[in-house]
Each structure stands twice: as C-alpha cells, then as structure tokens.
Image (cartoon, rainbow, N blue to C red; front, top):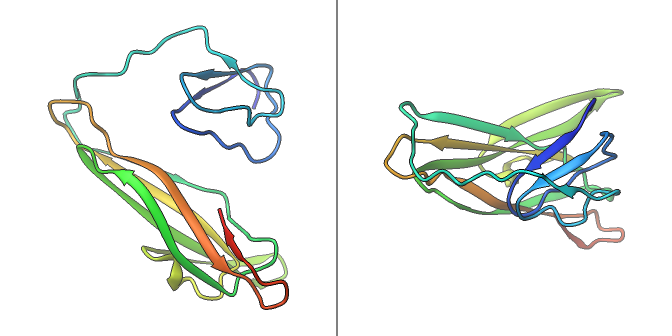
Length: 161
C-alpha cells in the first residue's frame, strides 16, 4: 500500500503478512498489538450514526484469503458463526479450493455448509451483509466465524481457526 493506512473496525483486526505503509492509524477500540510495528490512535473521532438514512437496501460482501491447514484436511467440520441480524440479514458461505494439477486450482461453491467441501484442502469464507432502510441505524454484523477440521491420521489432532 502506498501511503498511510487507517484501520476502522471494532473488535479485532488480524493482518496476515507484512504491512508496508508509511504510517498506520487505528480508529476506536480493537486491533490490539497485532501489527508488527503497532498502530497509532487516529487523531480524529467519528460519531456512530443514530439515524438510518438509507433509501435502498445495500449488499456488502467480503471474502477471506484461503484458510489452508498446514497438516492437511481429511474433513471440514461444521463452522460456528456468531453475529447479529440487526435491521437486515447476514449470510456466511464457503468456497473450497482443490489442487487439480501443477499450479491449477479448482474452486467449489459457494456452499452454506463447509462440510460439503469434501476433498478441499483450503477454504475461503464469504460474508454477505444486507443492510436495509429503517428508522434506526442497526446494521447486521458477523462477529466471528470458527472453522474446524480433522487432520490426516499421522499426527492427527483437531485444528481450529
């Protein structure tokens, strides 16, 4: 990223890999000390909206990087999703990745249940939020998605992320 980076989120922010920015600020709670060089509190305040000014529904979506357990996956177990519908809806779906040859990956899904992604060694999480017009600002949110899997028999243990 070329220039300063501003992290605006509640809860926890997880950054995979290196962050290369001249300066990193965070706004509000959360974030912890996850960044290697830390983040400075932003020199501004944003008030939470009280009124919902939407006149049309808005759909937002985000997809994770692949979750690829290092010891492999025999079977994905049911995911645990925690969130709030608010004035709208949320949906969590999963896309599986299976290697089909050298440098070739087949993508399966999206599916509502990660267990359906048999033979996939990696999974991406797709989160969709539908924010609806209304009187008060109470958007849907997804607080956490926990994935679990069974590893191959050698060195078998449960994994979770």
